[in-house]
Image (tube, rainbow, N blue to C red):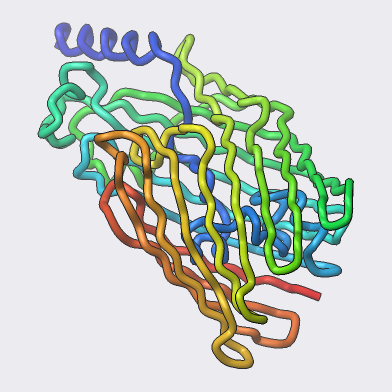
Length: 340
């Protein structure tokens, strides 16, 4: 019993010795419509979700838009590292102003000791202990938009972020349960100011966009002394093209490496499209590739499909599913949008 206690004390000390990032709060953590296009949405964002995807998108969007959105995704818990994330969004906006609140939860589990992590063919079930990290973040923001030239707008979402960060070492627990219940860990709460920036340019049928998220990289302390979780800065560029009225093709690319949902390096490239196939029905699809890393989430790919149904001329119901490589993340989403 004494040696077991000493082991956990050592593992906890090792965990505290290294800074951590919130590995599973990826760029595409929110947005059912965007996820249906595999995240190729930075240059498309023209509804209330622009508060998250590209603040400048409000300038070319509808006169008024309201969105309520819920998404969830996870990786295969049989991998060396595994993660899960979920999010929901309430946002409204007009061409010059937007208000938003969204909640993100990200959990990652991995071997707690370097020796367990060093064996690439070792399953998490064989590891004697697991490191579990969870960050629940609440973002309340106001989006301001300004046109700087014909067809060109810039925007910023200024936000207060309340983060509840937790880190622990567990042994002998079911991996799926750890992913599902990571939010139940005892966490420490703190608040930070942050900002997201965006630019959108429209030239006829072509639109280009750039978004910088988590500009200040806010850091949140956990209950373990010296162990903090950080929201990484994310930079993504996109382009969209309207080949015929009612249809849009888009592509996005991350400009910096971040850490993916399953713990490895990530730098995604996404391709997607959406269009109207009937008076009340819209469809969308896409694929996403991780171009960074050789293991974990490295080189993994996923495909997405989604649809929208127009309940009325202004009310839309959206849904999407994502599948593919086990380490890339499989998920679903559902949303309601009011567009006027």
